[in-house]
Image 1 (cartoon, rainbow, N blue to C red):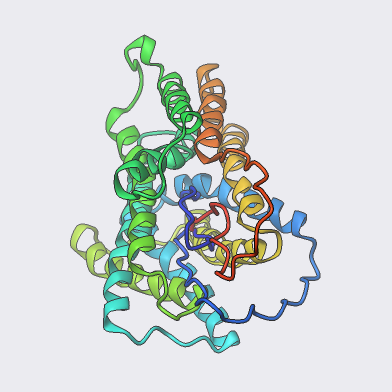
Image 2: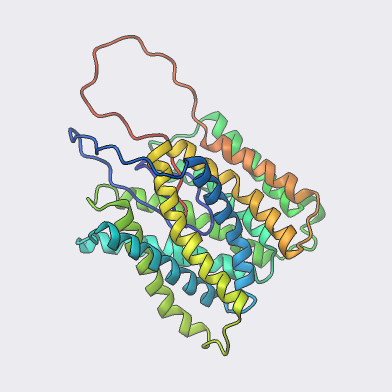
Length: 351
């Protein structure tokens, strides 16, 4: 899954989505004409997006009951790509023409789609979908830590550093550190945490290499998903054999995971960012682990100890602090600055 983000965005994304790099407007260009307001209220679309991404971890779990992890990822990317290609055809979007852009998109496809999607699929062979959803919520914590090193203009404040510490304590609470991680599948949990780390690494890469390409967000995201699908098409036959059967429920889960969580969700998120802005749109991130936990417990019968929801709330509190910005004080009146305004606050990127 992926969501459109502003040029300066480094916010988290839900495990299933792909990234959406956007090209900043050139100084002095006129703003684009206002888009026609969608018939469906943005709050309904916001709730739908939260449900789609929240249920993605359940769909991964069900998919791995009938298919190998790489097959789940390949099917997911194939279905998601089909949705975006159809949207691109309807809007007559042009593919990027620069070979350099395609090279950067290949790396972005690996970091933001092929690798994290595969890691989550392998992780859910041994860990519950609830834990995978909570691990995904650590992406903004990883992003804040990495931005200190990789993005010199994004210096941390005391509040954001405190958020990183709070989030880390939340992770230890979820994992039951005081019990010596008893009963925890360390390899599976490690893969889920590594998958969540892939997202901010990919976002930083996209931010450094794909801003100002001249292509639309939809064209870049659709092209990126196509490349991720090709990567899995090469890798999957090397590590798996063709499925002997196509069980109904796992098959439907993989199709829904791709068409909804990796296709439709991108379009929904892009529309939300355009209508209500990235700051409001990124709030969907904090609903995903809650929905993933509720779905895993209610529909899959996964057991839930007290430390899991408590730790998840602490993780989300820490993530919220890492994304916060201090209030700006009113500056003295002065002559207007002819230069264009800076980019909007951090947005969400997930697919």
